[in-house]
Length: 294
Image (cartoon, rainbow, N blue to C red):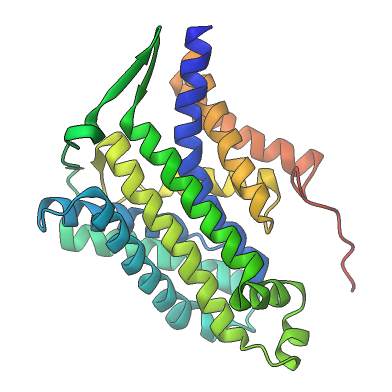
């Protein structure tokens, strides 16, 4: 029983990171029907920005997290303006290839500037380094920080989407871009804001994974980015609550496979879930089948 509780706690911590990344995928897809495969590499940039702030600037966790969020927002906007906006009316395959190209550019551009070596995050000190033991269950302060930060960011996202003017514009554009434009909504600004929000969450996830696993490298965004995409599809891509739920489900499933089976199979199980969900319910757990006019 103690091992089960421990695995659930570990799964929630990992799922929080996947959920933050998956939200970026699902928001961008919900607005412009684009799978932004460069999103996982923005998460990688967030990890490096946090590392630079903590090691070179000697800042604490919260200032480093805030700077990573702001800079990743700027990167996300720049990517949208430079790479995706000129292809707004292009075929989906052209945009998809561009997204893969942007992903490779971010990976190897980062490798060019910082090198391919694995970097180690500085250990947190004081209260943030504490561990709490209840029976045989161990909870680290890192895990508590990850879950609390994720809840705060997700709540802020929901408030923005549901209760602000720009959030209403995002929902309008996701329903019908042309109609939203006729009603006076600036579609380009709304899309850029969506990229900014998604990139901010990915940047935060990068810092969180840095303090959780300690090591980072320029190619670290590929596999978590793909797993977060699976989480978004599992929950229902384009649906924000679905991305949250999918992230936590994938995190818990992966930890359970590693804990009760073999860590060698955890990636295979995640992608097997993607195949099953596409066969059995392509719209995802929270998605609805919608007929497409032709």
